[in-house]
Image (cartoon, rainbow, N blue to C red; front, side):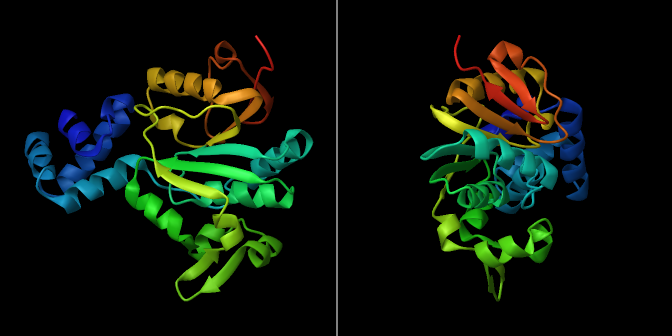
Length: 247
């Protein structure tokens, strides 16, 4: 695990151990190594092995408007409380579907949005910046949104320039790098479920500090989080938390 941390900057001790051991064992066995020591040694000199490892442990699975009913809840809440300029952070943004979905919602609400989108996987960020997606990723995109926010290309559907200009992509490690401040919204969906309880609480506390009073945290529909009150966050809609306005 220490070798992986040195090579990738990703500390596997923050991930749930049984899940991570299963993933590593699968990669080791598929590549024909007899033990973890030989597999770890090979990571230092084989870029393809290292790339495969990063892809497997960062779990880059997403789509536009994943769980559409939850995005509808978020839009309804923002329509009431949000104002321009609107500052948001998509943490663990994978290939960009999530921050681009948020940018589309903001455009529909007439919000001038500045969205910071981050991930630990640099190759995923490169794909996100390119902004081209297969029809499968657009399964939850309505015909109106497809017409307004995408353009067809030989590679697939590309997010419009207007949407891409709202989003800034950057590599960021949630468990190692500093957090921004004074945010209106943080979107972090289906990432915390893979982490240890200690890592979750550390990240949630950081999110709370990053939000301005009254700001919101939008999490995944598979994530049941505890200890949110202690961080000043209360549930205001399914999987949507709000930071208290004051002490």
